[in-house]
Image (spheres, rainbow, N blue to C red):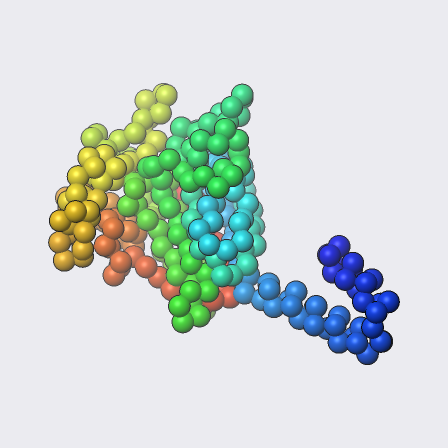
Length: 255
C-alpha cells in the first residue's frame, strides 16, 4: 500500500463515520486497481552474444524506465500503464568508462538512462500504442530510419501475431548505407532517406502521399529480409499489427 494511500486513510479517520470510511477506502482501492487494470508487462530479452543497453522513449502516457543494461540471455520486465505510446530500441558497443557512449543507438545523454532522448539513427525501432482506437494495442517494427539490431515482438495472449526483423541487416548492408564502428565492423545500416535525404526516399515534397511515394530499390532490400517491418514511410499495409488492450509483450533482441 502506497504512502499516499495510507496518508489519506489516516486523514479520513478523524473526519468521517465508520461507514463513510469504508466507502472511501473501497473507492480508493477501485481507483488504484483501475489505473493499473490495462497495464502491460513488457519483457525485454537479450539473446545477443554481447551486452546491449535497451532504452525507451515515451510519446504519450506515463514515462517508463529510459535505459538499462542487459547481459547476454538476461531479461527485464517493464510495467507500462495504458494508455501509452512510445518506442523501444537497443544500444550496443557502449563504453562505461567516463562519459557513457554507444557506437550504435546512442541517445547522447552521457548516461545509461536516456532521460527523454531518442536513439541516434540508424536504429531498429519497436513502436507501440497501448489502448488505442477500438480498445486495441497497435505495434510495429520500423526500419524507416535504418537498422542496428534484429528484434522480434511477441504478444503473450489473444492469438495476436508476432512481428519483427529477425535478419541481421548489418551483414548485407550496401556500403553506401553502412555505418561502421571504431573497429571497422558495421554497427548500423541507414535507410536511403537517412543516407541521401532526397524526397523520393523520405516521402516528402512531391512524394508526400502513398500515391506518389513508392518502394525503392533500397527499401526493398530491407523488405526482402524483414517482410513484416516498415521499410519506408507508407509501408503500413503489411507492417502494422493489433492486439486487444490488456495483453503483455516480449521484445527479444537477436531472436
